[in-house]
Length: 311
Image (cartoon, rainbow, N blue to C red; front, side, top):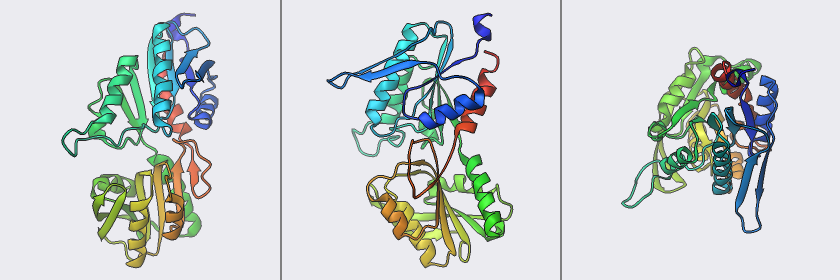
């Protein structure tokens, strides 16, 4: 069999075991063996434990907390693949750490998200695949080929099931963005439900991780409001938007966000805000009981199937 007709090699480095094994099953493609370890001083050692010469290699590995350590695992492993003459290296990074450091706010600020993209290319990554990346303006500056997948289809499917079960018509739904910047996301998601409306919060952020909601632009009174976002981190903005909606006439509030970080008091804030349902994707490995976790494995498997079928 010629090398070009061989299936790609699929690796996981430990950050996304659930997704990686589900993708492996869906594709009937066994996970390739590898080794990732850390020396006593904290240095990373990583390498494939199978031949990779002239093979297309795919790595599934999110870089959530500990962000820098997971990033280093990925970089060292990519270097090992490159040194072993892999034909190509694709890094599927469902949650991309540093993505929110996307612009200069004050003089002297780094754009760390772009720096990570450049480092990945230098290490040997040919293509980066991410999911609901925080800033498309930043991603479009990455030097290597890049693809942004979306978890919206799995959220839309589950949300529709729950609406049917609750016997709620789409015209009684308002999809809400927690800020003006996410308005397009809210509009696009609302388009999945004929008759659903959309709105966005007007907020002021006096300091990092603190938001003051000044109003909601859109018709949400008397409706089930679904707040849609890319990340739940401290849940500060999310909880304030939910409380504002409920205090001003919303019937109830549900939340869908791709990346569930849940830093600090996030879970408590969500509970205090009387949010009824929380949906997250499993871009970050979690056993978070407060949320319903939906798998992104079918989306990643479809991407691999469509782009590597000929290899």
